[in-house]
Length: 237
Ligand SMILES: *Cc1c(COP(=O)(O)O)cnc(C)c1O
View: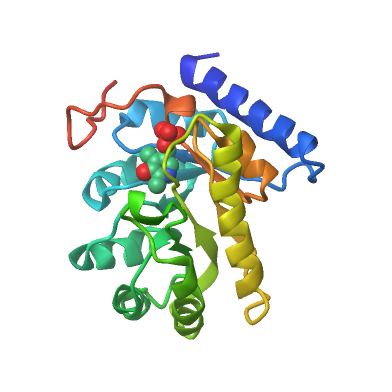
């Protein structure tokens, strides 16, 4: 087995173990392999090992990689900050968007989603760490935005995503993830179809699964260190 296949296997074991520890059904947590700033060769190794969902943060970089994985037909998840001038790329090439924060962006995506494709699956990104982190909307603003997004024909609102302030303390990790879980529970009183909690990364996936994550987004634990020195990963490793 190659390096990526081994790491992927280990991450899947961690997820299965966390599901068991939390008394959750096997397979109730799915893995998005976060491949930003990773070379295409590593994505191909993961795809050959059976990984079928990839997360990217930069639209232009993703566009260069997507054709190389066509034969595997993976799901593409956009998880980074989305600028208004990049919505069309996400609407045309992605299956999911985890980082929705603004109604104007949602309306553009809905208009730009091609008729031939199913609605874009979306999560609202919520800031559960207060002022210490910039990305994401305030928990108290989720109801209003969720109601408006749920009306848009080109989108299918699935739930909430968060990326909390990193902490090595499992109690603090769990407190952040619990905030997102409670936020989804409140939303489900009016939007019972919502079923997704996108939370948990390489260093805190166990805490996220314990608090109800349905999707974990794992980068370095699957692919190894990212190339922070290049803006676009080359096709060679
Ligand atoms: C990079 C990134 C991840 C993965 O982080 P790792 O620590 O490498 O697992 C997950 N979610 C988002 C939004 C990211 O930008």
